[in-house]
Amino acid sequence: MKKIYTLITSVLLISSTSFYAQTISLKQEFEGFANGFHSTIDSVAISPGNVTDTLWYTFDLDLIPDGSGASRPDGWFFSYPYSELNHGPTGYTYTDGTPDSNTVFSANSWNNFGETSSGLEDNWLVTPSVVVGPHDTLYFKSAPRQTPRYCDGYEVLLSNSNNDPTSFTTVLSTAAENTALGTDTTYSTFTFSSGFVHGLDGTYIDIAAGTNPSHAGQLRPFTIPLTAYAGQTIFVAFHHNSHDDNLISIDDVIIGSNVFAAGAGISEHGNDISLKVSPNPSKDIVQVEFNLTSESSVVLNINDVTGKLIYTENQGMSAQGNHKSTLSVSSLAKGFYTITVQTSNGVSVSKLIVE
Image 1 (cartoon, helix red, strand yellow):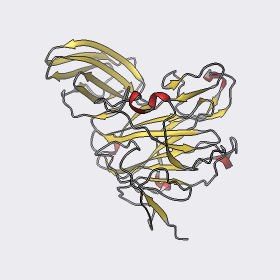
Image 2: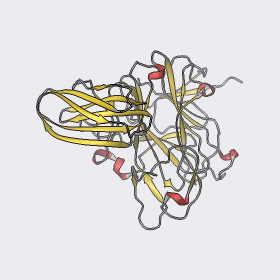
Image 3: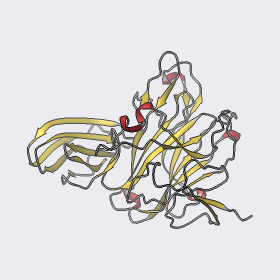
Image 4: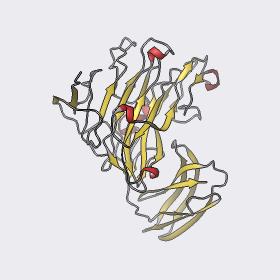
Protein backbone atom coordinates (compact mmCIF):
# COMPACT_ATOMS: atom_id res chain seq x y z
CA MET A 1 0.00 0.00 0.00
CA LYS A 2 1.34 3.42 -0.91
CA LYS A 3 2.01 5.56 2.13
CA ILE A 4 1.42 9.28 2.29
CA TYR A 5 3.73 11.08 4.69
CA THR A 6 3.21 14.55 6.07
CA LEU A 7 5.81 17.21 5.45
CA ILE A 8 5.54 19.60 8.36
CA THR A 9 7.37 22.68 9.56
CA SER A 10 5.09 23.56 12.44
CA VAL A 11 5.29 23.11 16.22
CA LEU A 12 2.74 21.15 18.23
CA LEU A 13 0.77 19.88 15.24
CA ILE A 14 1.61 16.23 15.81
CA SER A 15 -0.12 13.09 14.55
CA SER A 16 0.90 9.53 15.38
CA THR A 17 0.79 8.20 11.84
CA SER A 18 2.84 10.72 9.91
CA PHE A 19 6.38 11.82 9.15
CA TYR A 20 7.38 15.38 9.99
CA ALA A 21 10.22 17.40 8.58
CA GLN A 22 12.07 20.59 9.32
CA THR A 23 14.49 22.35 7.00
CA ILE A 24 17.72 23.04 8.86
CA SER A 25 21.36 22.14 8.30
CA LEU A 26 23.24 20.37 11.07
CA LYS A 27 26.47 21.58 9.51
CA GLN A 28 25.49 25.23 9.79
CA GLU A 29 23.59 25.63 13.04
CA PHE A 30 22.43 23.63 16.03
CA GLU A 31 18.93 22.25 16.35
CA GLY A 32 17.35 23.78 19.44
CA PHE A 33 13.79 22.82 18.44
CA ALA A 34 12.51 26.33 18.99
CA ASN A 35 12.80 28.52 15.91
CA GLY A 36 12.50 28.32 12.15
CA PHE A 37 9.06 26.67 11.97
CA HIS A 38 6.09 27.73 9.88
CA SER A 39 2.36 27.26 10.26
CA THR A 40 1.60 25.53 6.96
CA ILE A 41 1.21 21.77 6.50
CA ASP A 42 1.54 20.12 3.10
CA SER A 43 0.69 16.48 2.41
CA VAL A 44 3.19 15.10 -0.07
CA ALA A 45 4.23 11.66 -1.25
CA ILE A 46 7.68 10.86 0.11
CA SER A 47 9.43 7.52 -0.30
CA PRO A 48 11.38 6.42 2.80
CA GLY A 49 14.99 5.54 2.23
CA ASN A 50 16.28 8.82 0.81
CA VAL A 51 20.02 8.73 0.20
CA THR A 52 20.30 12.47 0.81
CA ASP A 53 17.73 14.66 2.51
CA THR A 54 17.74 18.19 3.92
CA LEU A 55 14.78 17.57 6.25
CA TRP A 56 14.26 16.29 9.78
CA TYR A 57 11.74 13.45 10.22
CA THR A 58 9.85 12.10 13.22
CA PHE A 59 7.66 9.04 12.99
CA ASP A 60 5.82 6.63 15.24
CA LEU A 61 5.92 2.94 14.27
CA ASP A 62 4.25 1.41 17.36
CA LEU A 63 0.98 3.41 17.23
CA ILE A 64 0.41 2.71 20.94
CA PRO A 65 -1.99 5.32 22.38
CA ASP A 66 -0.99 7.54 25.30
CA GLY A 67 -1.87 6.00 28.65
CA SER A 68 -1.28 9.03 30.88
CA GLY A 69 -4.77 10.45 30.58
CA ALA A 70 -3.29 13.77 29.54
CA SER A 71 -3.83 13.23 25.78
CA ARG A 72 -0.14 13.57 25.03
CA PRO A 73 1.02 12.84 21.48
CA ASP A 74 2.15 9.26 20.93
CA GLY A 75 5.37 10.04 19.03
CA TRP A 76 7.90 12.88 19.25
CA PHE A 77 6.43 16.30 20.08
CA PHE A 78 7.54 19.73 21.31
CA SER A 79 7.45 20.53 25.01
CA TYR A 80 9.11 22.62 27.67
CA PRO A 81 12.19 21.16 29.40
CA TYR A 82 11.51 19.05 32.49
CA SER A 83 14.01 20.76 34.79
CA GLU A 84 13.32 24.26 36.05
CA LEU A 85 17.01 25.00 35.46
CA ASN A 86 16.51 24.49 31.73
CA HIS A 87 13.73 27.07 31.38
CA GLY A 88 14.29 30.44 29.78
CA PRO A 89 17.00 33.05 30.25
CA THR A 90 17.73 31.98 33.84
CA GLY A 91 18.49 28.42 32.73
CA TYR A 92 21.20 27.12 30.45
CA THR A 93 22.96 29.66 28.25
CA TYR A 94 25.30 29.42 25.33
CA THR A 95 28.85 30.55 25.90
CA ASP A 96 28.08 33.85 24.17
CA GLY A 97 25.49 34.56 26.89
CA THR A 98 22.29 34.04 24.84
CA PRO A 99 19.53 31.93 26.43
CA ASP A 100 19.06 28.27 25.60
CA SER A 101 15.85 27.39 23.75
CA ASN A 102 12.73 27.03 25.89
CA THR A 103 11.51 23.98 24.01
CA VAL A 104 12.78 20.45 23.53
CA PHE A 105 11.66 17.47 21.47
CA SER A 106 9.96 14.92 23.76
CA ALA A 107 8.68 11.38 23.29
CA ASN A 108 6.06 9.66 25.43
CA SER A 109 6.20 6.03 26.61
CA TRP A 110 3.34 6.03 29.13
CA ASN A 111 1.17 3.31 27.61
CA ASN A 112 -0.10 1.16 30.53
CA PHE A 113 1.37 -2.02 29.00
CA GLY A 114 4.06 -2.43 31.65
CA GLU A 115 7.47 -3.94 30.91
CA THR A 116 6.28 -6.19 28.09
CA SER A 117 7.25 -6.47 24.45
CA SER A 118 3.76 -5.39 23.39
CA GLY A 119 4.31 -2.10 25.19
CA LEU A 120 7.63 -1.22 23.53
CA GLU A 121 7.64 2.29 22.05
CA ASP A 122 9.08 2.71 18.56
CA ASN A 123 9.46 6.48 18.02
CA TRP A 124 12.07 7.92 15.64
CA LEU A 125 13.66 11.35 15.31
CA VAL A 126 15.94 11.40 12.23
CA THR A 127 18.37 14.15 11.23
CA PRO A 128 18.96 15.43 7.72
CA SER A 129 21.82 13.87 5.79
CA VAL A 130 25.28 15.15 6.75
CA VAL A 131 28.62 14.72 4.99
CA VAL A 132 31.03 14.00 7.86
CA GLY A 133 34.21 16.05 8.02
CA PRO A 134 37.56 14.61 9.15
CA HIS A 135 37.20 15.97 12.70
CA ASP A 136 33.44 16.01 13.19
CA THR A 137 31.65 15.06 16.40
CA LEU A 138 27.97 14.56 17.20
CA TYR A 139 26.81 16.72 20.10
CA PHE A 140 23.38 16.70 21.73
CA LYS A 141 21.59 17.04 25.08
CA SER A 142 18.99 14.75 26.59
CA ALA A 143 17.01 14.39 29.81
CA PRO A 144 14.34 12.01 31.12
CA ARG A 145 11.25 13.44 32.79
CA GLN A 146 11.98 11.33 35.86
CA THR A 147 14.89 9.34 37.25
CA PRO A 148 15.38 6.79 38.76
CA ARG A 149 11.61 6.11 38.79
CA TYR A 150 10.10 5.73 35.30
CA CYS A 151 13.36 6.74 33.65
CA ASP A 152 13.00 6.45 29.85
CA GLY A 153 15.65 4.92 27.59
CA TYR A 154 16.61 5.48 23.96
CA GLU A 155 19.26 4.66 21.37
CA VAL A 156 21.38 6.92 19.19
CA LEU A 157 21.77 5.15 15.84
CA LEU A 158 23.66 5.85 12.60
CA SER A 159 23.00 4.96 8.98
CA ASN A 160 25.50 5.57 6.18
CA SER A 161 23.12 4.41 3.45
CA ASN A 162 19.69 6.10 3.75
CA ASN A 163 17.14 7.35 6.28
CA ASP A 164 14.82 4.34 6.37
CA PRO A 165 14.51 2.96 9.96
CA THR A 166 15.75 -0.47 8.88
CA SER A 167 19.04 1.09 7.73
CA PHE A 168 20.06 2.33 11.19
CA THR A 169 22.20 -0.67 12.13
CA THR A 170 25.05 1.11 13.96
CA VAL A 171 24.46 1.86 17.66
CA LEU A 172 26.40 4.95 18.78
CA SER A 173 25.11 5.04 22.37
CA THR A 174 22.35 3.64 24.57
CA ALA A 175 20.51 5.27 27.48
CA ALA A 176 19.02 2.86 29.99
CA GLU A 177 15.38 2.65 31.07
CA ASN A 178 13.95 1.76 34.47
CA THR A 179 12.69 -1.84 34.32
CA ALA A 180 11.77 -2.51 37.98
CA LEU A 181 10.69 0.09 40.54
CA GLY A 182 12.65 0.73 43.71
CA THR A 183 11.54 2.11 47.04
CA ASP A 184 13.38 5.43 47.52
CA THR A 185 15.66 7.92 45.75
CA THR A 186 18.75 5.71 45.83
CA TYR A 187 19.47 4.12 42.48
CA SER A 188 20.55 0.83 44.08
CA THR A 189 16.92 -0.12 44.75
CA PHE A 190 15.96 0.23 41.07
CA THR A 191 16.67 -2.05 38.11
CA PHE A 192 17.73 -0.68 34.73
CA SER A 193 18.35 -2.05 31.26
CA SER A 194 21.87 -1.84 29.84
CA GLY A 195 23.26 1.57 28.96
CA PHE A 196 23.90 4.98 30.50
CA VAL A 197 21.68 5.71 33.53
CA HIS A 198 20.78 9.38 33.73
CA GLY A 199 21.50 10.80 37.19
CA LEU A 200 23.30 7.73 38.55
CA ASP A 201 26.46 9.80 39.12
CA GLY A 202 24.49 12.45 41.03
CA THR A 203 24.72 15.10 38.30
CA TYR A 204 22.20 16.70 35.91
CA ILE A 205 19.17 16.08 38.15
CA ASP A 206 16.86 18.23 40.26
CA ILE A 207 17.05 16.41 43.60
CA ALA A 208 13.55 15.44 44.74
CA ALA A 209 12.48 16.45 48.23
CA GLY A 210 11.25 14.04 50.89
CA THR A 211 10.59 10.44 49.89
CA ASN A 212 9.67 11.18 46.27
CA PRO A 213 11.65 8.62 44.23
CA SER A 214 11.62 10.78 41.07
CA HIS A 215 14.33 13.33 40.33
CA ALA A 216 13.60 15.61 37.36
CA GLY A 217 16.24 15.20 34.66
CA GLN A 218 18.35 18.19 33.59
CA LEU A 219 19.54 18.41 29.99
CA ARG A 220 22.89 16.66 29.86
CA PRO A 221 25.40 17.19 27.03
CA PHE A 222 26.80 14.18 25.15
CA THR A 223 29.60 13.94 22.60
CA ILE A 224 30.20 11.11 20.12
CA PRO A 225 33.20 11.35 17.73
CA LEU A 226 32.39 10.57 14.08
CA THR A 227 35.94 10.38 12.71
CA ALA A 228 35.36 6.78 11.58
CA TYR A 229 32.76 8.10 9.08
CA ALA A 230 34.80 10.96 7.62
CA GLY A 231 33.84 11.61 4.00
CA GLN A 232 30.63 9.57 4.26
CA THR A 233 27.03 10.81 4.06
CA ILE A 234 25.24 9.78 7.24
CA PHE A 235 21.93 10.10 9.08
CA VAL A 236 21.59 10.02 12.88
CA ALA A 237 18.42 8.73 14.57
CA PHE A 238 17.25 9.14 18.15
CA HIS A 239 15.20 5.98 18.66
CA HIS A 240 12.87 6.08 21.66
CA ASN A 241 12.41 2.40 22.47
CA SER A 242 11.35 2.46 26.10
CA HIS A 243 8.54 0.44 27.69
CA ASP A 244 5.86 1.86 29.99
CA ASP A 245 7.82 4.67 31.67
CA ASN A 246 7.15 8.38 31.05
CA LEU A 247 9.00 10.95 28.91
CA ILE A 248 12.39 11.57 27.30
CA SER A 249 13.70 14.77 25.69
CA ILE A 250 16.35 15.67 23.10
CA ASP A 251 17.77 19.14 22.44
CA ASP A 252 20.64 21.06 20.78
CA VAL A 253 21.71 18.54 18.15
CA ILE A 254 24.75 19.47 16.06
CA ILE A 255 27.44 17.78 14.03
CA GLY A 256 30.62 19.83 13.72
CA SER A 257 34.33 20.06 14.40
CA ASN A 258 34.66 23.13 16.65
CA VAL A 259 31.81 22.84 19.10
CA PHE A 260 31.79 23.20 22.87
CA ALA A 261 29.24 20.89 24.49
CA ALA A 262 30.35 20.53 28.10
CA GLY A 263 28.95 22.30 31.13
CA ALA A 264 26.26 24.92 30.60
CA GLY A 265 25.56 24.77 26.90
CA ILE A 266 26.59 24.36 23.28
CA SER A 267 28.26 26.96 21.13
CA GLU A 268 30.26 26.93 17.93
CA HIS A 269 33.62 28.63 17.87
CA GLY A 270 36.44 28.82 15.43
CA ASN A 271 39.82 27.62 16.60
CA ASP A 272 40.51 31.18 17.80
CA ILE A 273 43.19 30.20 20.32
CA SER A 274 44.97 27.71 18.04
CA LEU A 275 44.43 24.77 20.38
CA LYS A 276 46.72 21.79 19.77
CA VAL A 277 46.77 18.51 21.73
CA SER A 278 49.66 16.06 21.23
CA PRO A 279 50.42 13.24 21.05
CA ASN A 280 46.92 12.17 20.05
CA PRO A 281 46.14 9.27 20.57
CA SER A 282 48.00 9.03 23.88
CA LYS A 283 48.51 6.52 26.68
CA ASP A 284 50.30 8.70 29.22
CA ILE A 285 51.03 12.42 28.86
CA VAL A 286 49.52 15.02 26.52
CA GLN A 287 50.71 18.53 25.79
CA VAL A 288 47.98 21.15 25.47
CA GLU A 289 49.22 24.16 23.50
CA PHE A 290 47.23 27.34 22.86
CA ASN A 291 47.69 31.01 22.07
CA LEU A 292 46.03 33.94 23.84
CA THR A 293 45.56 37.15 21.87
CA SER A 294 45.15 39.08 25.14
CA GLU A 295 45.41 38.50 28.88
CA SER A 296 42.66 36.10 29.95
CA SER A 297 41.45 33.67 32.56
CA VAL A 298 42.09 30.04 31.53
CA VAL A 299 40.36 26.81 32.58
CA LEU A 300 41.27 23.41 31.12
CA ASN A 301 38.61 20.66 31.17
CA ILE A 302 38.52 17.00 30.14
CA ASN A 303 35.07 15.47 29.50
CA ASP A 304 34.17 11.90 28.60
CA VAL A 305 31.87 10.86 25.75
CA THR A 306 28.76 11.39 27.92
CA GLY A 307 29.77 14.96 28.72
CA LYS A 308 30.79 14.13 32.30
CA LEU A 309 33.58 16.35 33.61
CA ILE A 310 36.58 14.11 34.32
CA TYR A 311 39.23 16.70 35.13
CA THR A 312 39.41 20.48 35.52
CA GLU A 313 42.33 22.81 36.08
CA ASN A 314 41.88 26.54 36.75
CA GLN A 315 45.04 28.31 35.62
CA GLY A 316 43.83 31.74 36.69
CA MET A 317 44.85 34.82 34.70
CA SER A 318 47.37 34.14 31.93
CA ALA A 319 49.34 36.64 29.86
CA GLN A 320 49.02 37.20 26.12
CA GLY A 321 51.07 34.76 24.05
CA ASN A 322 51.76 31.05 23.64
CA HIS A 323 51.07 28.64 26.49
CA LYS A 324 51.71 24.94 27.07
CA SER A 325 50.25 22.67 29.76
CA THR A 326 51.05 19.03 30.49
CA LEU A 327 48.21 16.68 31.45
CA SER A 328 48.43 13.05 32.56
CA VAL A 329 45.81 10.75 31.00
CA SER A 330 47.31 7.46 32.22
CA SER A 331 44.48 6.95 34.73
CA LEU A 332 41.73 7.42 32.13
CA ALA A 333 39.95 4.46 30.58
CA LYS A 334 40.53 3.84 26.89
CA GLY A 335 38.12 5.79 24.71
CA PHE A 336 37.14 9.20 23.36
CA TYR A 337 37.35 12.44 25.34
CA THR A 338 37.21 16.18 24.70
CA ILE A 339 39.70 18.74 25.99
CA THR A 340 38.39 22.29 26.22
CA VAL A 341 40.21 25.52 26.93
CA GLN A 342 37.85 28.14 28.36
CA THR A 343 39.01 31.75 28.20
CA SER A 344 37.45 35.14 28.80
CA ASN A 345 36.93 35.49 25.03
CA GLY A 346 35.56 32.06 24.15
CA VAL A 347 36.10 28.34 24.15
CA SER A 348 38.08 25.97 21.93
CA VAL A 349 37.76 22.20 21.93
CA SER A 350 39.84 19.27 20.72
CA LYS A 351 39.04 15.58 20.67
CA LEU A 352 41.37 13.23 22.52
CA ILE A 353 41.75 9.47 22.10
CA VAL A 354 43.19 7.54 25.06
CA GLU A 355 44.69 4.20 24.08
